[in-house]
Image (cartoon, rainbow, N blue to C red; front, side):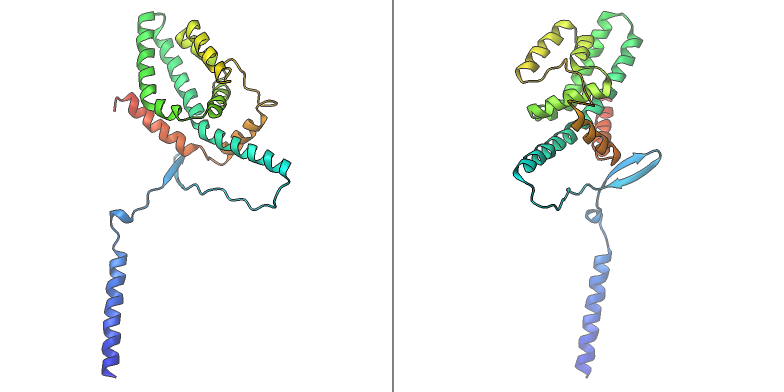
Length: 219
């Protein structure tokens, strides 16, 4: 009996010590989450991979579904860049209006902006596929109301616009192409509407904003 009580006492002390050790949380026990700020509230966000359970589709419908899934992936990949491009263009247009007609100052300002954008985005954009680049061009038009050809012409001049249009056409990317949400680009528009409805893109976009502010500050 005495041995049994001693064994229970030792086991209880061991469990108590183990429990106290488990309760003491350190720095490595902290779990960092992404977040989205809506108005003045901050909401933690964790994206889980989509999972769908469905019957096996006929081959024709399966191919169509696979094409749509790939399109959705590509749109979600580049949409935050399109939003960032619209914000950057708005900021650049405002600063150019303040500078006025001084060609030298405008040139110096645009050169500074280009350098910072290359530092921030070049590596990421170079990793996009040709298809993703085509979708990005369409989404930039959607967000800014200007096709990429006109944007380049306004900021870099007509010659640069023609050169980039020629390069784009080699890879099947027409910079003059207008975004068409009701016909040619209807699937993209539906996907974007869904992304906006569930805040899927906002965390990446806010991370881009932080990095852009750091780039502007010269960090």
